[in-house]
Image (cartoon, rainbow, N blue to C red; front, side, top):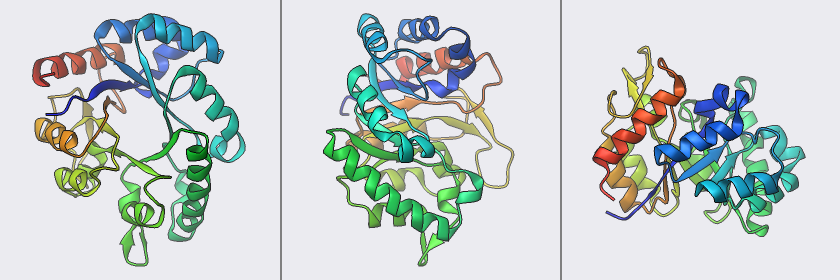
Length: 255
């Protein structure tokens, strides 16, 4: 199995970060995470955050960047990410009122533009899915697939959230294989009762229904660079949840 880095999507710790951004990053590093994916920077100046990450031996994987900032602040987002050593600019979410087929056609044109700009700046642009990308079709094709068919692989990479793929009724292993070579980032998460029409519990790794070890093996074969732990909601204190998930990784993912 090819070695993949183990990262954390910091949205999971949004409340702790709001209270103590630096202290929370120190706790994440102490747990053994190798990289972090940002969803905001806690008002840190880029140079200060770069130095803190270097001190903690944490890599900046990339950042989730809002649709508004992609459209209106992309150059500043690129500059910040370059300063802290990150590689990926990622669109994480679309508002509920902008997800019909007509709206998606506009998004895809914008994604082409953002992707080209990000690529020319020396970084990579990616999209992070939820379930709604599998619920709308463009010309008879699910939006998720249409997006990657219509935008070239240089300008748009896949950040696959594997929990939402399974929730949508699709085979997560088949979808990983389908995007082999274009899938540098995979959100590794676990759902209990994680199927359409059932109530979802987002749980620590190993407590849910996803075939995690098969997913990890498939991701390795697909050329994934980073497995990124994310838990949308935590029944337990989030710092405890991400620590437990990291212990599962240490016990099960042989480096």
